[in-house]
Image (tube, rainbow, N blue to C red):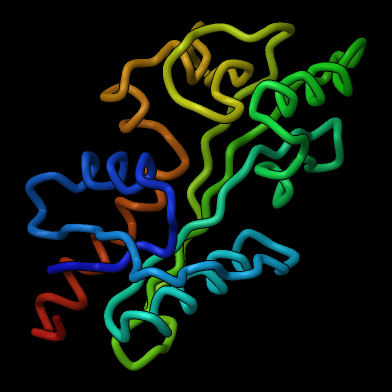
Length: 195
């Protein structure tokens, strides 16, 4: 079963296909022209906007996620603005660290909402996965991307960027959400013969 992923990020497609390996489901990039305006106020709204934009181009099963870092002491920011919090990934990390200077409450979580749209263009399933942790004082690790180097995973002494791909795929917000989507696809969609 092929599902169009509402993203132009090849790294994300690879990461998701790694997580679903062996499931008989493959995610592919949308046809050219995919450029939705993410103007929702929540991860849920933005994931729907992207999934629907992919569906409009491909008219088949489409899935999109919207994810970001939510820091308690910053009122949930960067949140839905995570990818646009500054011009570059490095500057985004620097901005969060500078805003967190002197703050004792370092609690944060990564959130990822996935929305699955069926071939009729309707929302079939939606789920939000979370990964709890806290913000470090300085970046650590070279794996991953985005805010991974400053996100200390709860119950671990490693940042997300210090985990290898396999470890990250066990606990990340994206893999938590994706596993729920897979479960739904396997039990509800395939068993009903609705591929």
